[in-house]
Amino acid sequence: EPFLRPDFRQILSGLHKMGFVISINSNGTLIDEEVVAWLKETPPTRINITLYGASDETYEKLCGNPKGFTQVTRAIRLLREAGITVPVIPGIMPITNANQVARAIKLSGSFMPQRFKSLVDKFGSDPAAMKQAGIVYASEQMVDLIANGVQGIHVYTMNKPDVAEGILNNLNRILGRI
Image (cartoon, rainbow, N blue to C red; front, side):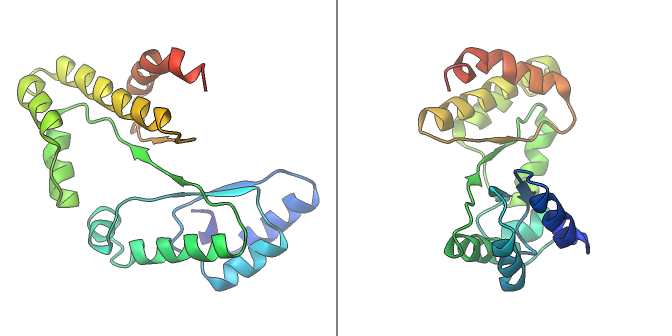
């Protein structure tokens, strides 16, 4: 999170003066009126904010921040009111083993769509098949997002290059048409 750095304002200002085109990736929780005021002085081209859930309860379970959703939505509103571009980027985490499903449900307090539950029921006991099915399922979600005009997707591959490669192989022709 760049806003954790006490010297981030100075770094941003220096890069801005040097003519750099700046894009900031943030979780948004530390962006308040004061930060927006200095961002207006040295505006980035855009700020990418990842939304980790749709409620404070989900943020508390996933991020340990009981006010995270409120903080992020407030930051997005403040930035947009200041004329700073803030796309909300959907995130996809390919579920590639059955244990991830149970953990994701426990952490988020949510449920899995029936189609995905059927996939886990069918392939969850075979790690290679589950991995492939999870990559295909995530790829299909991305195709749907792309087809509906989404300009960027944050893919959480959890340092698994083979998962990223599987998604790339599934989407290479589609991504070439964007």
